[in-house]
Every structure is written in C-alpha cells, then in structure tokens.
Image 1 (tube, rainbow, N blue to C red):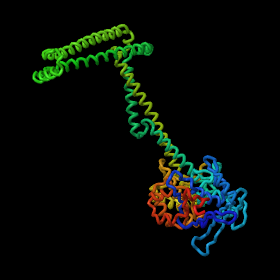
Image 2: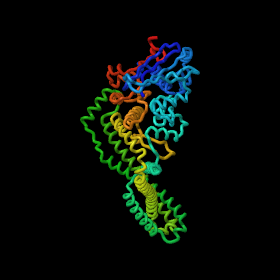
Image 3: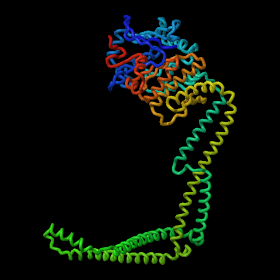
Image 4: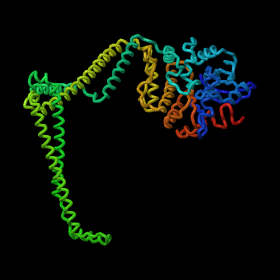
Amino acid sequence: MYLKTLQLVKKNGQVIRHVDFHSGVNFVVDEEASDTHNHVGKTTFLKLIDIALGSKDKKLIYTDIQTNTKNIALENFIEGQKVSIELYLCDKLCSSDAKDIRLKVDLFKKGHRYINDERKKINEYNAELNELLFNNTKNIPTFRELIPYFVRVSAKRENYDFLQNLHSSTSRVTYRAIYNYLFDISDSQAFDKLEKAKKQLDQVQKASKNYRKLDNNNQDEEILAQKLEANRARQKQLQREVNDLVKGTDFVNNREAITDARQQYIKMKNKLDALQYRLSRIKEDIQSTEAEQTKLNPNLTRDFFNEIKQAMPRVNKTYEDLVSFNNALKSNKLNYLKNLRDQLQEKIDIAKKKQQDFLDENSDIVALIKNNDIAKYDELNQELAEVSKTVAKQEEIYSTLYKFSKVEENLRNGIARLQENAMDTSAGYQPKLNIFNQCFTELASEINNIQPILAYHKNLKEFPVSVEDLDEGTSSGTLKSLILCYDIAYQQFAMKIGKQVPNFVVYDTLESVEGDVVLKLVDKIKTMSIQVVVAILKEKLDSSRIDQNFQMRNTILSLSNDNRVFEPSDQ
C-alpha cells in the first residue's frame, strides 16, 4: 500500500491543508534560514501520518514533550474547529484501477476513527490496518508493533533506536515476534547453542584484547616464553651467587643486623659518591679555567676603553687598571675553585675514614659476607629482586595469555562442531537474512562506504537482531543515513520474497547527514517503486547539490513561519 493524499479538514468540510504524495522521495521542507528551525511543523506533519496510522498520541501535536508545554492556540484551534486528518492509501500509484482506502481520525478530544467512513474502535482500527497493509489476519504482532518500522516518527520521543524503537517496557519476546514476522525466521535449538558459543568467543576475544592493552601485556606467547626461561635461569644464577657470598646459618640468624648495617653502609656510600662527583666537576672547572685565553688585544681594547672614557668622563680608571682587573678575575676564580677542591677533598677523606671505621666496628657482621663485600652483596640482592619481579610479571602474563588462547581454541572447536550440526536447522532464517543483507550491505557500501549486516541472535535472552561490522566511532549522521539504508533495503527484500508490507517509509530528519550522502540516497530512491517521505531543511537540500528542479518536483510541502502545517499562508 502507498500513501496517496493527506488532508486536514474542519468539521464544516473546509480543507485546511491538502498534500499529495507520489512515488520516490517526498520532501517536507523547512524553508526557514534562521534559528527557527524545527518550529515550523515539518515533524508535526510526519506525526500526523503516524496518528492516521493508529497512534493514540494525538495531544502531542500541540505539546512539546521535552518541555511539557502546550501550544494553547493550536489546541484551541483544533478543538474549536473540530479538525480531522484524512489519509488516503492506495494499492497502486497513478493507476485508474487502484483500490483506495480512506482513513479518518478526529484530532479533537473524544473524536473517533474511521476506515472508509465506517467508525472503528482503536483496537478494531489497528487490527484492520494490520490486515490491509501487512495481510496479517492474526494480528500477531499487532499493527502498532509493526508500523514504527515504516513510520520512523515517535509521537512520544524524538530519539530512538531504529532496531528497538517501541516503548521501553516492550519485552524481547515481543521484539522477537516482530522480527520473526518481518523476516519469516524460524527458531532452531542447534543455532541457539551456536550463537551462545559465538557470543562467548566474542567476549573472550574482547577480554583478551583489553588485557593486552594493559601495560606491556601485548606480547607474542612464544617470544615471552623464551624471555621467561632466560630470566628464570638468571634468577637461579643470582641466587647461587648470593648463597655463595654469605656464610652458613649465621647469616640467616643475623639477617636483621646485616640489613641495618647495609642501610647505613649504603647511606655512607651514597654520600661519598656524591662528594666524589662534585670533586670531579670542580677539577674539570679548574682545568678549563686554566686553559682559558685571557690575554687582551691591546689595540682593540685600548680603542674601546678610550671611547668609553670619552662617553663617561667621570671614570677615573686607566687602561692599565682594566688589564690588571681582567687578570685578577681569572686568578680569583682559580683561587676559589682550588679552595673548594681542597675543602671537598677534606670531606671525602673524612667520609672514607667514617666508612672504614664503620666496617671495623661491625667486623663481626661484615665477616658473615665473604671478602667483607657488602657492596657486592647489595648489588646482587638488588638485581635478584628486580629479576624476580620480572619473572613474576612474565609468569602472570604468560599464564593469562595461555588461558585466553586455550579458551578461544576450545570455543572455536566447539563452534565448528555446532556449525556442522546447525547446517540443516539454520535454513529457517539464514536464507532470508542473506537476501536482506545482500541488499543492505550493498546499499550501505554504496552510500556510506561501510559494510554492515543484520545479524540474528537466537538466544532468547538477547535482543533478536543487531547491526554488526560498524565502527565504534560511527557518527550520528552516518547512523541516521544507515537507518534509511536499512529501510530501503527492507523494501527491496520484501519485494524479492513477495511479502506484503507498506510500500513507504516516513523518516524524521536528515540534518546531520553529510550532503553527498543525502544526494546518493535521493538518487537511489529514484530507481525504486517506493515512497520515502522525509523532513529536511531547505539549506540542507541546497548544500547537498540536489537539482533545484528536482527539489521543486519532489517537494510535497514547504513550511515556514508564515506557512505552518495548521496555518497555511493562503488562508
């Protein structure tokens, strides 16, 4: 069924608004080029279509759901003039033998609904539409569960998930019934197990990937095993050297005293090292100062001095004074550095004596270490601690990566067995999804240069379908255009399998979609025998380089501040 005509009519029969639909793209255009976008009524017009197709939310025509404020003037106009919406559907466009269906919904409070002038209760109205548009005589799923996949305008909210676009309380069982109906999918126990295994494998792979991102965990297991083996050997070697350096059980019994002695020894050694470093730098400064060329060029400096003397007559120094001063600078610097050198050497001598006195006073403890080599003992223990820490870390990484690999291997083997068992039973849904995905992937690739697929989840605890192979960073514009790609692909799919569904899609906005993508979508719709009704800004059409003549031919309604849905400019 196609959309043919929409009218807003007063009780006295006066037509407020008349809009004719046609095949292909139908633009509902916001002509305003100012900050008043989204206030002229283009989304309201689409909601009117939704209301004509059974939505109960008539009051939201004049209520802003975000602010919960009412357009009192519009509400009074609808109530006072008893305005109704009339939507004509037909089974063929531009055909003399087309079968028309007239839907009428009173927009005012306590108004009624009619199909071909026959008054209907809301449940009867929607059940009959289910049969007329979907040939769904059992009314399972219900019409209002199915039509949101063709009229993508929520009368309750502006934002929605295009796969999960019903009320938040809708159960997954209901969603499964909807998708099973739309795609003629049958269930199978073997495929249920297969999907669970695939989901588990995906979770393991993601966990493995996240683990590898931590620290330095992203390593080749074979290379890591070789590193680990080498570090274990080094660990054993260091432990043997430490054991050889200490003497018997007395070392163990005096470990605390040795530790204290080590700490004191390390402090003295660090102090001595610092003094020796400073001394080496002072000696370098002395050498460089002695090597400096301090002799002045007598001609240049005397001329320069005379110029300064003339500019500053009060200076009472002679040129010879200047030469003497320069020579004194180097001499004073050398004297200072040499004096500092002598002071540091004295401190070093004192530090060395303290260190030796300490070793002498603690000879009984130091003797527990061969050759009194505390420094060697400390060096070995420090390296042993570092290597042991590395070994522990590598063992943890290797063990975790090995476990991930084994779990993935077991899951892959299990999936292979399940796939073999599920080959026959998967025939209930896979052939149909293959047909759809052929249309969907090809269209999305052509429009957005992405290759998504619609995947079916057999696990009853999961949402039945998902769009896969999308980048995580997909922009909102790409997602919006993807929704339309999905809807167009479904129309192609329904035609291929001969399934009766509405031959139209009503789409809210394309404002965030790139201009070249809009142009590609429009060009694609031209080639199909479907209707796409879309609300869009005039400036978006222009920036998308859509031909002006094409815009004029395919614009079914132009709205502005002076020409709103319920306030035509000619009335």
